[in-house]
Length: 319
Image (cartoon, rainbow, N blue to C red):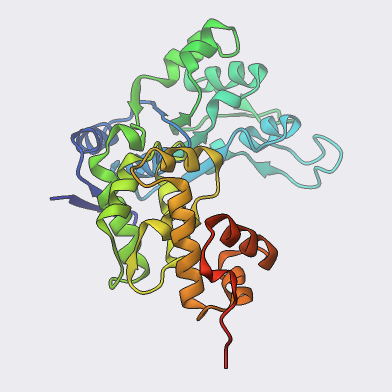
């Protein structure tokens, strides 16, 4: 049976041994002040792990500040992290505290740390070593007590080997290294998570056995985020409360996902044919309405029906 943890006001459904071990490690690490590096693929839940570390820590009543290093323009990174004094540069009309100051006594989460500029890597290393710093244009040194948690989907060890990331900073950031396993590495969680996302929309919905089998076969390059999005889209196409294989096929929108669905026992052509016939049935045989349900043109629908060589090429009259 899945184990449900609750933190940040959200249920975390876990069934796999890998995730149960990770959650246990999070709670142990959280109660220390060590610097934590979280790695994992895009969409695997690195930020949730970071928030859980803060939530379970002795700093949980103190500030939580997060920043995406990749989203900051290079010329603004220093002023955002360390702040600036009034008049430090054109447009600095007032003194501004940096993110380190705002996170004082709490936790600063540096997401996409692998994208940090080499010059900023040096300055970050000095702060991690406890060295006070100046705001831009400042004359007074500032000391902060901040716990650093960082995350990346890059292979930092490889980045160190190629000279794109400082080895001393890497070792400083990874006092504890938590790796979030990809969803395909914990297939036991796929069904539990999919059903959770379904129940969050409406508890009356459920998956057909064929749909669950297809979900378990997926590669999930986008991990949990991709699974959540696919379930949300499938609900739109569902006719009734059962989410079938054809509903999942309609929700697919990337070539990679389509390719993996094709690995299932049901061929893409068969899924397409079934989906079209279901749309025609829902539209009472009206081709234009069926085409709108499918998100294609009436001409495309007619061509597909001719390929199938069915008697459905003649549109049913609607009173």
